[in-house]
Length: 42
View 1 (spheres, rainbow, N blue to C red):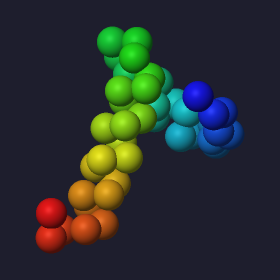
View 2: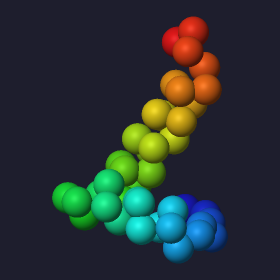
View 3: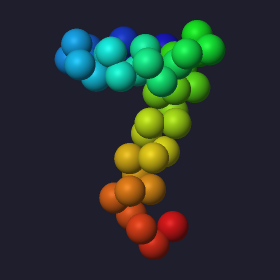
View 4: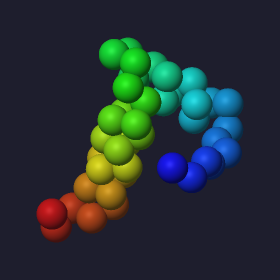
């Protein structure tokens, strides 16, 4: 999997969202919510 660099504040939000310990799932959920929020037709 490729590595990405994120700001400390985004990393903190990701850690908070992944309370069960699975950061990949939390990241994909954030991407889904972002895309849905920017494309209300879906």
